[in-house]
Image (tube, rainbow, N blue to C red; front, side, top):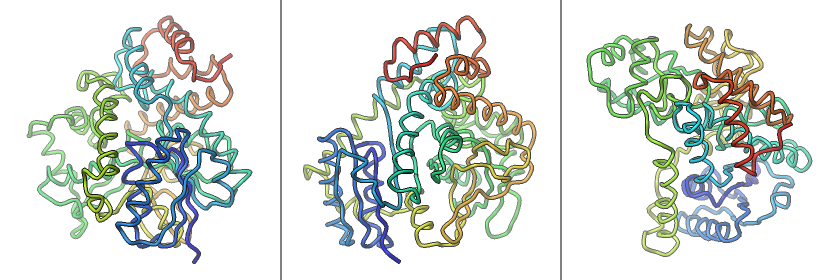
Length: 423
């Protein structure tokens, strides 16, 4: 089997780049891989390439790493394209959060859903579609693996507009499972689960003991009913009590999808965007020798995107993590044309969502509404339709005024010059 040719777009990202570089360049199963890093910022690109070389040399895994600011130069004949894209991340995220508040919309976080999620969608979909168009021309058989938010909406738009195989990834579900296990007095490896939802609003539809097969939901419901909720998980556990099933990823993300989310999570985007400074310092500490590069070169792997790339390339049969893909019958009472996040099943170089059958009502009702909003938001971005963007806003549970929704939309279109022109 020939080693893979991998292109990483957005390689200068501090929140995404460090451990992705480690997972690609210090992974023995990717021995011989050729990795090309791409970023529009030449300075950040040079730092990412240098750090990649340091990780590769410290690990001793014979991979090659190069860099370019021209993505078309990199894409020709590659096998996998990894994308982490953000436009003025800190500034725009804060605007996506605070401007809707000023217009009277009591939403959470402003990243993947709610009014702020619409503007994030409008910014990033045209850029992701442009990448897919380049891939159609230069590497039509390659897979696009994305960490770019809003994940579900981007994957929905790519499904609607391009034949390129696109997979979305997130750490949310895998990051939640150790917490759930700890609440139940178990280890993460003791859990067997099924999951279904849209990214950052993914529900555990089945929760069992991996060895005995015991249904753990009764114990989990008892925990939610009798214990004080840990900070940051009050909303999720209240929803478990109300709906009998548990939404993963924590209150900040889950709160975006419901009208009562801000009753539980009120912190702004600052708590996320200000972490950029810390991440940048960590990057430089490794580059400038204040931290030993062997710390990261020898760190455990397991990055969900890279593990999935390996499973695809080596044609492994594997059930692993979660992935964002078209429904294709995985959930029979959710829109067949929609995109979902669920457990990934890999086999012979292909991947699909594990079937969950009938998603419990009214969980399915909440997901159907969000999938409708996502479809409209994707259409607005793809077609440049102001009316469709307004419709997506008006369907959102966080929006309670048509007049103020029109005002917010006009305000943001004037304020953010990197939004597409809407007619």
